Length: 106
Length: 125
Image 1 (tube, one colour):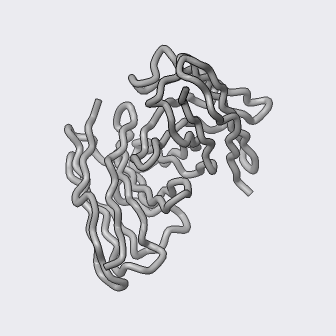
Image 2 (spheres, chains in turn orange, yellow):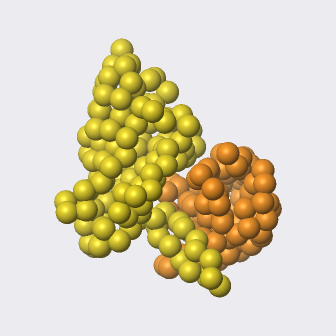
């Protein structure tokens, strides 16, 4: 199975900050990488698919980049509703998720 | 409104069985492949199983292979997960999720774009 890692595991940030989360795959997955946001007690929400394509309805402050083994999720200006846990997920082979990055308020 | 609603969770003893259901509405269920994803208390997301739109292709995570069975009934717009030989480590919230496919430059990319609210399975004596 392809292993996914994320860094950092958690971060504290302020409203308006630029936030970057990194995801790394144990082998090349081309652009078969998705990002999800999950708030406590809620189901995950698809933010980015195919590494850099913004899901319909997702604010443009979210962006994704990367290919191969290294990927990045960027929030250009953190908003109060963005405090959540973010997961990457590969769909190149049998699905695996990263361990998550929790973004909380500084 | 596009919606997925899970049911069937509950408390079960180790070694027991449970059948989860996921009712779909607001979209053409038979056109989409589906997944089950679970989340243990305080933990991250774990993919459990996948079924294609026609049930011709099925995959399982190694952790549930041989114990869980995914199925669907397109006439009833429903997805199922039969869980046997349950273990303590199967305790989790179980979500069903729809697979959306995007064609980009000749390649097909899948993402889980619609999720249910989850149903809780607790395995404990």
